[in-house]
Length: 285
Image 1 (spheres, rainbow, N blue to C red):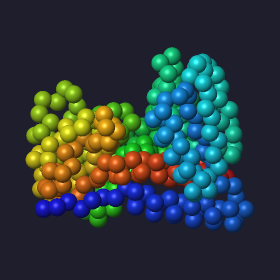
Image 2 (cartoon, one colour):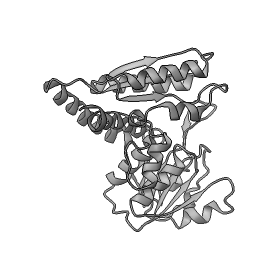
Image 3 (cartoon, rainbow, N blue to C red):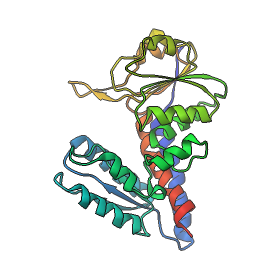
Image 4 (cartoon, helix red, strand yellow):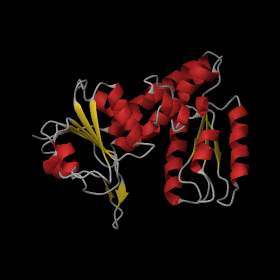
């Protein structure tokens, strides 16, 4: 068996084009474009690369972008004041604070300061709680993108067994909730799990979001399974690696995402979808 590659670049490009068309219709109707504010604290190069990609995305779809780059020495109170200003700005539909933040700033306090209706990362406890209660609003972007990739396969996943490797607040935990919402039976493995292999071998869907290259062995994959690799690690030679042994896994899986070019583009486009949703649902009246 040779797996079908799930191309996140192609799918995200199609979604961006749909968003661009919707923005064009808004403007034809005399309405403002969706507005996104991005706050990037400090000089972390990986974060700057990621934000530059988001800037390009906004330009492509016609969003208004308010990008702010405070120094790493900014106080928590000053950062909270910046968020408060953006919460009140009626031209801004989404606020994204790029993580990680400097050690002297409380990440949770910053996330909670963003109004839930402008939380386009989907990290606010209110929005995570909505997902728990099966009434999602603004959804965490990576799990949202993963579900789009899975739906793109055309496979009917209700009733399937799914294993999520990694239980981070922003990916693993909400990923499990999304799969439960889709009707899957979900297992989650983490650093205290005694036998991750067993949980992977029985899974119709495997989503790995740990960041350990080669953690998931190809021979563990159930024949025909859907394999989604969220892991992203840069090796010493600069090459990007996923959590899954791609070559061997692709000989057993039915569907598999590449690294790079799988989940990453879908995370970014999901943020755009959330911003448009926030405008149309909460801020267009």
